[in-house]
Amino acid sequence: MLEKFNGHRILLLQGPLGPFFQRLAQELRSHGAEVIRMHFCGGDAWFGGGGDRSIAYRGPLYNWPDRLKKIIREEKIDDIFLLGDLRPYHRVVPDAIKGFSTKLYVFEEGYLRPDYITLEPDGVNGNSRMSRYPDFYLKQQWPPLPEPLTVGATFGISARYTITYYCATFLAGLRYRHYVHHRDTGPLWHGFRWVRGLFRKYYYQFKEKKLLPTLTDKWSKRFFLFPLQVHNDYQFYHADFPDIETCINEVISSFAKHARRNQLLVIKHHPADRPYRDYSALIERLAIAADLRDRILYVHDLHLPTLLKHARGTVVMNSTTGLQSIHHGTPVMVLGRAIYNIEGLTARGTLDKFWRHPPEVNAALYRAFRCWLVHNNQFNGNFYRRIKGLPNPTGVLWDAAPLPAEAPAPAVSPTPSSPPLPSA
Image 1 (spheres, helix red, strand yellow):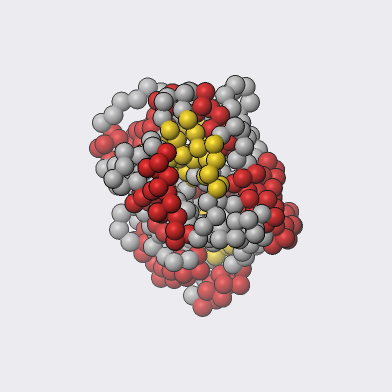
Image 2 (cartoon, rainbow, N blue to C red; image 1 turned 90 degrees about the vertical axis):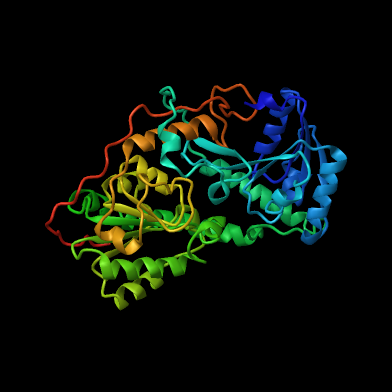
């Protein structure tokens, strides 16, 4: 796939925290491309080696679009690669390249996780240009693919890269004094919260260890899962709500009015938000006001795939958890813009209706959709850990990534009786 950039002049903006873009530059150069790196802060500079040309931008954010146009023109840039199209220095790129022949390529965490990364032209998630018409995917024929190569655990590696990046950014703060990061970069601030997050992880693992067997037994197919997103995720740009608190309020209110009385709402905290947020007080207050204390569970560390297999339905803003739910045949209601929000894959109509009538997942459409993803914008690999045995610098399999041969059957209807609520 990367060989098509032979002879191209490529500009790399901000990538994942760590050396992935350094490795990508090395791999692009091996295919005959010329690579230029942009540094906006100390973290970018620290991970920006590897023999590439680099340009440091230290000016204010409002001058960046003009500077970018000048770089594109003077350096004759053919392609721009970046991670996340809504970061402060990235969201201006689509307008900046107008009038040039420059093409934009956007990386993102994989739509199909955990063993894939996403690379799309023009934009990702709500900005993706993927078709939203079922027939587009159903009419295409793709050969079956083997299982993906497994990446393995990445938490420790990504944490080390994150700490290094933020420390380098902090130490070079005066040199890049105008830098605007998409999140807080203070190493002490992050360090305290990651210690707190580690404590919470083990605390909730112990506290919730009896919940999963109860939910997958007596309450199987009788609960709706509502997985939360990270509080400062740019996915809110593509959501129907300005923040998590507003979304939680709306979902609980709708569930109280329209769900059956023998059903639960299980709200799952995002593991990446564990160090930063806790919504216990908010959820308890809303549950009391809606007379739902015995029908709402707020959980943190229960195994997500297992929950998805046993849920009656899943409510998401636009998270890739929705695709995982579809993979398990569990109906999905999307409260925002998502690439998979397609008739046959997700519910049509309102959230109020979804509680009573969650639709079945079209398994054939899901197989076709997943196959299209794998052949077009999903690549077997990871930003933080190279796949063992692959000789290329990124450790990513850039050819068509693997695909499970069979998709699961659609979800079944719940049985009528109502067991007692499990204790948290």
